[in-house]
Length: 124
Length: 124
Length: 124
Length: 124
Image 1 (cartoon, each protein chain N blue to C red):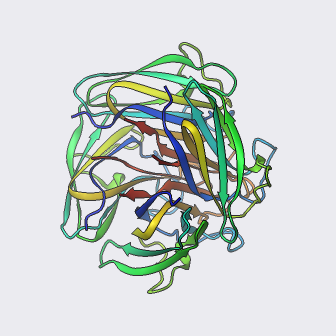
Image 2 (tube, rainbow over the protein chains, first blue to last red):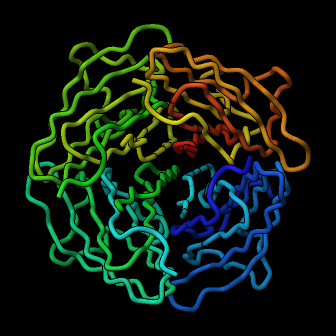
């Protein structure tokens, strides 16, 4: 049973620039968390939108059948790295239904730790 | 392909009053993040609702075709500035489908950093 | 134009017990933020659900036409105060469509500040 | 009146490893908050999905009629404990409609406190 939607949208991305503490545990990051409950592999296409230039993509993200993938946007480098501190939006498209959550960890400030989470917006 | 909805609602706005650390990086803010995946410019109208007075607006926010805009509510000044520390709600209306996310950064307390995020509420 | 839904649900309430810093600015709280975009007053009924006893209510919350109300759950006292540190869920019912957001501020730990926000869950 | 949906999805789970401060108040945790407004007990089945192995379950979670349950994922041990610091997704299935919210508390960093909350994703 594949649960969810095939298109998901995150408008509010921006990887915090800078971080404090041991890596990778305390690195600042934006993260996309994908759950594929179905019996077919989900081969996702991601496109990134910016304030001042055409969208960049596709990035690929493969989530196996009955598996999750939590990918840090910091780690996406093909076709190009997503720059730190640059506002972006992201659209994820999957051939099969999946569910997508967005998470930010911000450790810019020494001794502080901030998290923010929201479900991505599903398009039918 | 324009993804999303034409009307979005954020009931829980309130720009934190005060902040610690270098500006604009560590300024306290409320932010509205809009993604326009379509091929037509999105000329949004924003209206702000308060506890004790009639709504104020329209504010304008233009998001180009295939572009994002992340706007700090602190920076909205026309027709009038949104006052710090004043509870508000916001309705965003777009002639084309968009997706809207809300983000708060709170740096009032020295040495601390708080984030909160949620997708805005879409109206069909 | 009244936007939103008539019934909203928040399953994950719990007012943090204790706080640090000047009140009421730095008090720990759970908050319900309601936006009524319509031309009729919204006279909401709130019911609180617990782990080990029957629901308590109704609490009343009035949101004027074209107005917001941000109410701290800490301040709800009739028919009885919602106890600190006690897990609860809340159902809000309105005779007219409204939109509801949940916010928590946690200042239990000296020198730290945590926020969490989510839209409430709308029922048609 | 039973409000909500019968299937809920959380893709972005990961119990933070380590914590600072008195337990259980300041323990790091992921939490699932369930509200059952109906007149029938909700006997939920939870399944956990991982990056590199088949799903594990079912876990059981019983929520009485007109009751809530806030369960720390840290406390789920049957059929096996959910390991700290291991990314997971969770699907909750209920025979009756319920509403589910996800909450994370992260106290890994001494003197810091982070919260993140989002409604789970409902499947019809």
